[in-house]
Image (cartoon, rainbow, N blue to C red):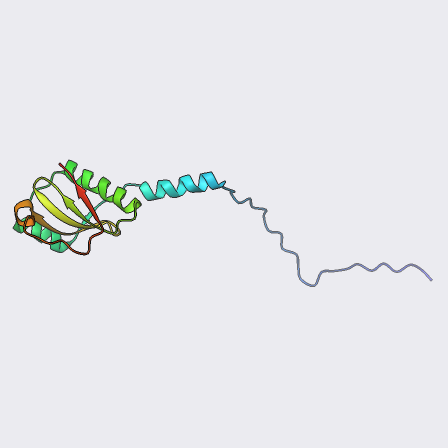
Length: 126
């Protein structure tokens, strides 16, 4: 009797997938990425209520001052602050650091007689 050749045929066609390499990040790189993401400048938003209070109370804050407030709020957020009182020369702002949003605003003379609750940080700017 002769030799019988048996060819094995796969039941399902083989699908070749391209070999991909995942970028492996070291713990140091991962930390630096997270640090960068946490410190990326987030533009401070002003709520409708706060915008109305700024207009009603004739409070004018320059772009440079807004930038400083934004930077300090980001710094406070990185330290775990959720809601902060920001004291400026001309105004007092309640800011949600967590949401990067100004919640309300008042002028400094009005702020002198106020009791501020539900804040866990204060930023004093001069």
